[in-house]
Image (cartoon, rainbow, N blue to C red; front, side):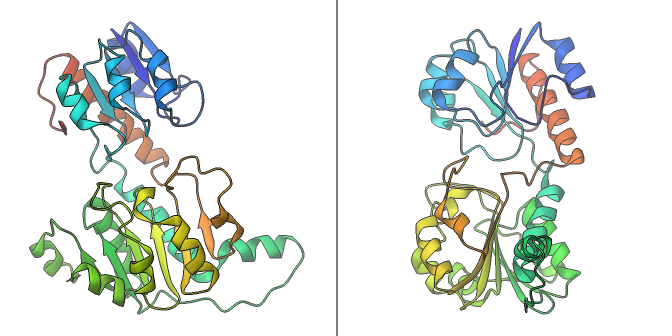
Length: 316
């Protein structure tokens, strides 16, 4: 049994129960040599002879799967499966599974860190203070403001709970909205146009599909309140980054917090020139607790599938 392990936070030096369990199960483990998500051409040679893969946010295209004839399972180390060609996986009888809920608290924490960093301009004030300056800056309070949440799944709900501690008004939109949950937790259910129009802060927690790609378009951003803030810790394709640049520069959008990008790594992005952009390197799920939970679940999912046992987290 040969297994490829691609997540950059799941290292061969990790002395964890998950790695020990995986090492005991498989005769051979292959690890990501690059320290970043793998492209199609990088995955193909690494998957040679592999029966399964613990997968990060790598590009599992149809071509990758065609060149991995022994591959039986792609066990995502995380929730999103937009980097996996599900149709190709289904055609080749490759099981795809994920780890729902394992990193929701971690992602919600970073979401709020970005919200606060934007509202109080923390990164730029930190930089200037360390440079010997003593700038005066009027930030924006979260208290009493309207937080719009697009996607009220596990992460969206965790963000809403944190917002309650700041006495924020929470409005939410989700095509699969749990109306009873929203009502019980004081969350006001609205449509997309309303959430765009009324949010002082907008937080994105949607899967990336053809319907949600560039859902935050130039048109949507122009319809937002002048000075509104946007945070994206879900998938980079949700925001039209080129349109966002112009609207940030002219001040219509007050600030943008990004943990995810249309292209990853993003390289030198024009957005990084702007003081009202706070950027982190797709790190929302990277806490000690979340990485351990994702490792445990992804390894167990892979072992269950390859052992012929029932796996509760099969996506396809």
